[in-house]
Image (cartoon, rainbow, N blue to C red; front, side, top):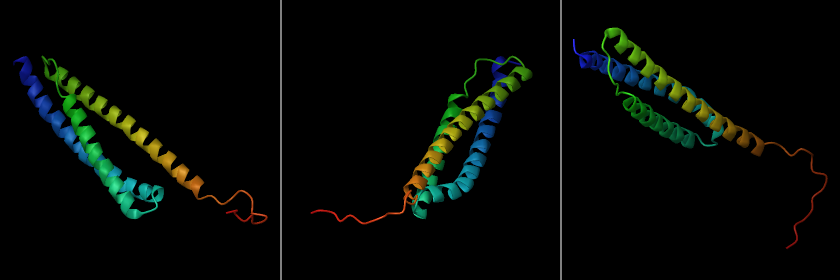
Length: 133
Protein backbone atom coordinates (compact mmCIF):
# COMPACT_ATOMS: atom_id res chain seq x y z
CA UNK A 1 0.00 0.00 0.00
CA UNK A 2 1.25 3.49 -0.83
CA UNK A 3 2.03 6.06 1.86
CA UNK A 4 -0.84 8.31 0.79
CA UNK A 5 -3.35 5.46 0.97
CA UNK A 6 -3.08 5.47 4.77
CA UNK A 7 -3.61 9.22 4.96
CA UNK A 8 -6.87 9.39 3.01
CA UNK A 9 -8.91 7.30 5.49
CA UNK A 10 -7.21 9.16 8.36
CA UNK A 11 -8.23 12.49 6.81
CA UNK A 12 -11.83 11.29 6.48
CA UNK A 13 -11.98 10.05 10.08
CA UNK A 14 -10.32 13.24 11.34
CA UNK A 15 -12.75 15.48 9.44
CA UNK A 16 -15.72 13.49 10.78
CA UNK A 17 -14.41 13.61 14.36
CA UNK A 18 -13.63 17.33 14.14
CA UNK A 19 -17.11 18.07 12.78
CA UNK A 20 -18.85 15.90 15.39
CA UNK A 21 -16.80 17.46 18.22
CA UNK A 22 -17.54 20.95 16.94
CA UNK A 23 -21.28 20.35 16.79
CA UNK A 24 -21.39 18.68 20.22
CA UNK A 25 -19.23 21.34 21.89
CA UNK A 26 -21.13 24.21 20.25
CA UNK A 27 -24.47 22.77 21.42
CA UNK A 28 -23.15 22.25 24.96
CA UNK A 29 -21.64 25.72 25.16
CA UNK A 30 -24.76 27.35 23.72
CA UNK A 31 -27.12 25.57 26.11
CA UNK A 32 -25.04 26.04 29.27
CA UNK A 33 -23.74 29.48 28.35
CA UNK A 34 -27.24 30.92 27.94
CA UNK A 35 -27.92 30.91 31.68
CA UNK A 36 -24.56 32.48 32.45
CA UNK A 37 -24.90 35.19 29.81
CA UNK A 38 -28.39 36.14 30.99
CA UNK A 39 -26.87 36.96 34.36
CA UNK A 40 -23.97 38.93 32.85
CA UNK A 41 -26.18 41.07 30.61
CA UNK A 42 -29.21 42.87 31.97
CA UNK A 43 -31.39 42.16 28.93
CA UNK A 44 -32.24 38.63 27.81
CA UNK A 45 -32.26 39.51 24.09
CA UNK A 46 -28.69 40.81 24.34
CA UNK A 47 -27.62 37.61 26.10
CA UNK A 48 -29.24 35.48 23.38
CA UNK A 49 -27.62 37.54 20.61
CA UNK A 50 -24.18 37.36 22.26
CA UNK A 51 -24.59 33.62 22.76
CA UNK A 52 -25.39 33.12 19.06
CA UNK A 53 -22.43 35.25 18.04
CA UNK A 54 -20.15 33.25 20.33
CA UNK A 55 -21.35 29.96 18.84
CA UNK A 56 -20.84 31.31 15.32
CA UNK A 57 -17.31 32.41 16.20
CA UNK A 58 -16.71 29.04 17.86
CA UNK A 59 -17.71 27.22 14.66
CA UNK A 60 -15.46 29.43 12.55
CA UNK A 61 -12.44 29.08 14.82
CA UNK A 62 -12.91 25.37 15.46
CA UNK A 63 -13.53 24.28 11.89
CA UNK A 64 -10.89 26.65 10.49
CA UNK A 65 -8.28 25.38 12.93
CA UNK A 66 -9.32 21.78 12.28
CA UNK A 67 -8.79 22.32 8.54
CA UNK A 68 -5.46 24.00 9.25
CA UNK A 69 -4.32 20.90 11.19
CA UNK A 70 -5.46 18.47 8.48
CA UNK A 71 -2.28 18.31 6.39
CA UNK A 72 0.18 15.59 7.29
CA UNK A 73 3.49 14.50 5.79
CA UNK A 74 3.28 10.74 5.58
CA UNK A 75 1.99 7.60 7.19
CA UNK A 76 3.61 4.36 6.07
CA UNK A 77 1.38 2.15 8.21
CA UNK A 78 -2.03 2.02 9.82
CA UNK A 79 -0.41 2.56 13.21
CA UNK A 80 1.28 5.78 12.07
CA UNK A 81 -1.98 7.01 10.55
CA UNK A 82 -3.82 6.39 13.84
CA UNK A 83 -1.06 8.15 15.79
CA UNK A 84 -1.32 11.16 13.48
CA UNK A 85 -5.11 11.17 13.87
CA UNK A 86 -4.97 11.04 17.67
CA UNK A 87 -2.26 13.71 17.82
CA UNK A 88 -4.26 16.07 15.60
CA UNK A 89 -7.44 15.57 17.62
CA UNK A 90 -5.49 16.11 20.84
CA UNK A 91 -3.98 19.37 19.62
CA UNK A 92 -7.39 20.51 18.40
CA UNK A 93 -9.08 19.76 21.74
CA UNK A 94 -6.32 21.35 23.83
CA UNK A 95 -6.40 24.49 21.71
CA UNK A 96 -10.17 24.76 21.96
CA UNK A 97 -10.05 24.19 25.71
CA UNK A 98 -7.57 27.06 26.05
CA UNK A 99 -9.82 29.38 24.03
CA UNK A 100 -12.83 28.25 26.07
CA UNK A 101 -11.15 29.04 29.39
CA UNK A 102 -10.10 32.46 28.14
CA UNK A 103 -13.76 33.13 27.23
CA UNK A 104 -14.95 31.92 30.64
CA UNK A 105 -12.43 34.22 32.33
CA UNK A 106 -13.55 37.23 30.27
CA UNK A 107 -17.21 36.62 31.12
CA UNK A 108 -16.35 36.04 34.77
CA UNK A 109 -14.67 39.46 34.78
CA UNK A 110 -17.72 41.02 33.10
CA UNK A 111 -19.98 39.42 35.70
CA UNK A 112 -17.84 40.73 38.57
CA UNK A 113 -17.90 44.21 37.06
CA UNK A 114 -21.71 44.00 36.84
CA UNK A 115 -21.93 42.87 40.47
CA UNK A 116 -19.77 45.77 41.66
CA UNK A 117 -21.94 48.22 39.73
CA UNK A 118 -25.07 47.03 41.54
CA UNK A 119 -23.66 46.96 45.06
CA UNK A 120 -25.32 49.16 47.68
CA UNK A 121 -23.30 52.08 49.02
CA UNK A 122 -20.80 51.02 51.69
CA UNK A 123 -22.26 53.48 54.21
CA UNK A 124 -25.83 54.67 54.58
CA UNK A 125 -25.98 58.33 53.54
CA UNK A 126 -25.98 60.62 56.59
CA UNK A 127 -27.31 63.76 54.92
CA UNK A 128 -28.21 65.19 51.54
CA UNK A 129 -26.00 67.89 50.00
CA UNK A 130 -27.84 69.90 47.35
CA UNK A 131 -26.08 70.49 44.04
CA UNK A 132 -25.11 74.08 43.29
CA UNK A 133 -26.18 75.38 39.93
